[in-house]
Image (cartoon, rainbow, N blue to C red; front, side, top):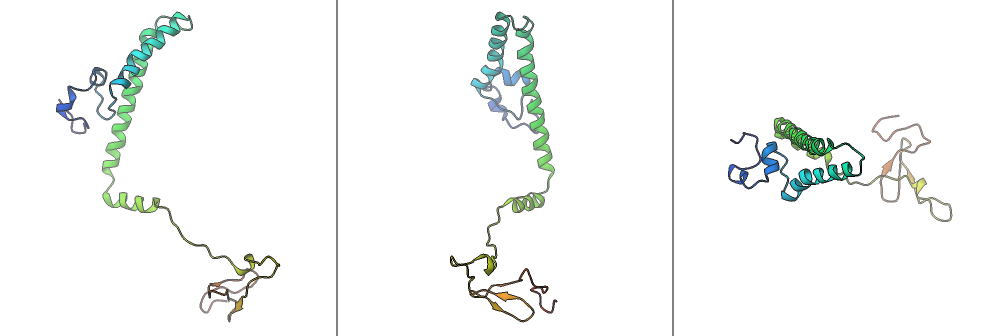
Length: 154
């Protein structure tokens, strides 16, 4: 019996490790080695801890069950994430992708910041209204003047 949100096809279900089938994992798909580490590794760790008398022998039963509970909880959280993501409309996903793209541009640097090694600035021309341009013709507002680089603004 496969659920609608299952990511594992019915044909592949019988080839999954017993650990994943017993837990009924649908979104987390651990391989054979990982399932071995989850179950037999947890049991071996619990036996070693019990032999070292760091924990009681109940840990041999409790630790593999605790690991299985965490794996199942991870599967449930993954299911909630997939369902929530499926509810977001495609338009919102595209808008989010556009917002997350890096923006590459050039910052305008005033001529006073580009001083030559001798301490003199590059040639700067004044325009009416207090706005200035550098040698490339880039307009910017001078920080010590009270006017802005807007048409008709003072």
